[in-house]
Image: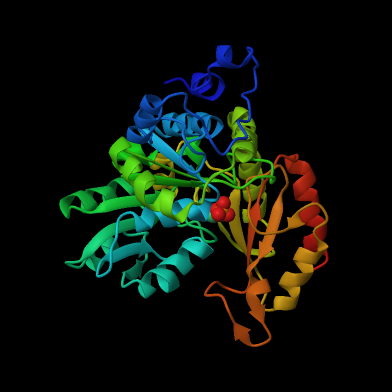
Length: 385
Ligand SMILES: *Cc1c(COP(=O)(O)O)cnc(C)c1O
């Protein structure tokens, strides 16, 4: 299916709403029936009909159809946040006594789900270095049910070879789940590589303006309908119709934003790689990166996140560099119009090291500003350190 068709037309039925170009926000919790026969039909066909907004809402459905199509998935289900989608996807595949193999250093709250939350319910998790797919195989136990991927992963941007991990999963009858937020649905399509469930934080690139939160799971219709009946309806982390509308609005410009972000990020990372005050740039799309070939094999393009290690022994220097940036906002998250810097050293409090990441690591996100504007800002901050 054509990306332009998906983004601009698919799922929209303008004649139903005065030929309005923008879809309506159906801000209703409830949908009424005229007859008992209609109500009976609704109850029997809940995943397909609009009955109650913690369930199905027409504005949310448009978003789900578009993201499913962009991922090449049969079906999708939207949530109120990315982590709600991650948690529901994982919970849908395990019960007490089961085991998960997860890539090490995933997104912060995925890490908390795996290490703190799931063990309370008798689900065991082993974290592995995902840069070698064989580490997944080696960690498989008789009770393993899920192989969990996040590629590239947060902060260090290491890749997992999706096809190789899928092959190991299929040999062992296991389910694969991937967090595809980094690449967005345009730049990596894991369903086509055989992954079972693809999860996105729609808060990031899909929303694209740092003004809305959402999440989505894509997969086979039967699996998504099972998630609807269980984790979605019981945990109730529903996406509001208004937020779905904002995500749809963000989606209209996703291709142009991503192209711009990708190009600017390549210019900025090339500048940083040559900079004498930078020890290392962690970005798989630099030709010098050990996973450069894999990045090109499984992704269509880079996006806007990468990290650097500053060449310094002192946390104060890292702080000074970040404090000196005038146009990068200092914040978590990413995917909006605004460029961001996030120093890991902020998690280090006098002597108690709270992070497993190096003190000199700074994560950057490149937004929609000009490359020159951003490089000049970095240059003046380097000059102060
Ligand atoms: C932000 C993020 C999430 C969580 O998404 P929220 O919308 O903040 O709940 C999950 N995975 C990755 C990789 C993220 O960056």
